[in-house]
Length: 428
Image 1 (cartoon, rainbow, N blue to C red):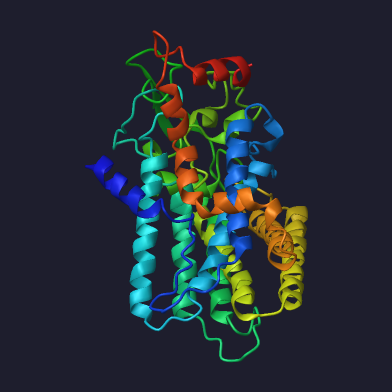
Image 2 (cartoon, helix red, strand yellow; image 1 turned 120 degrees about the vertical axis):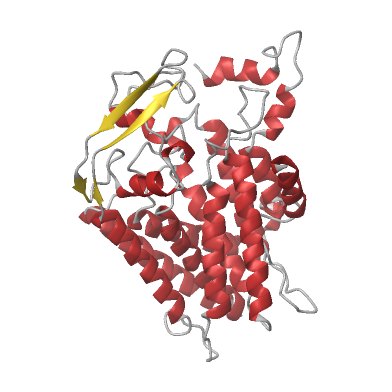
């Protein structure tokens, strides 16, 4: 049943770009398509493919183990940012708020369910030709789920909280309720991240989630915390919230912090038993708490989209985008200097500001190149990828393309091209 439902969702969504809903509700004709939006989406998809398939060979572009910012850590905020920009074009005029709300909610639900199918454990990766997921261990949150949360928050802001009455467009004056929502979400996030007390906690690791232990054996790990405001892998409040709300069995089983030196992870991805206890614990980088600041990224992208939708001159757009981007960048760097770490797994406030600024600067450059100077011949591949971004995202995230190639073998399942590439280049 889950598989049939997922196929229907994929069929409904795959013909559209990822979070490109540039179709005005109840309007007779569509606005002209901004080529720079497709190019930016295509760039996001290209970066995702680059870090997914190249990160094992070039570690510097893979996700940072904990604090820090690598190339891979920019992909998620870029997707959230461009979703917000697109929403400003979608809801430039909303004749029926109720209908627009239902459409936005339905699209968010479809995106969320698609994310559960892709990253919930249904597909077993390139090293297995099997599929299916134990509902007791399904992963509920992931990339598309986080994007869907940011999307619906920004969409509801645009539908219900826009009160632009003057001809000029101002970030603060025209959409001040959007900023109230953004500041409220940020305050809640910071209050929970730094204010919640995290007690000592324990978890059980069995052969169902790790091959370190013998069959039918399990081991209970104890993690000592008893503190508040800690932003390390073991005792942060984001992980505690996920364990209470989602359950530890529904979190990501291979968190990137296992690459820290404290975990001594082997080349085949196993964590030795003598490593720190928290190294064996699941942790979800797309967790509940981090969805708050992810939604703020989408709201920031929405403000960039307002300038694209309502300002007609290139100079005015570029001046406002540049000022806003560098203001966010300075604020984020300042927070990082005074002690708020740049951390993708926690989606910290400094990380949110810096990556949003980076997305704004990148989009401004692409807008200048594509829409102002019309150098589309240089970016036509990215533009095509952007128009088919959701299809490519599904194929890459689920490894469907790789699994399809892997299904053709010689005499034995392990004698296939993908296995040969992985054994020769990735595992060295």
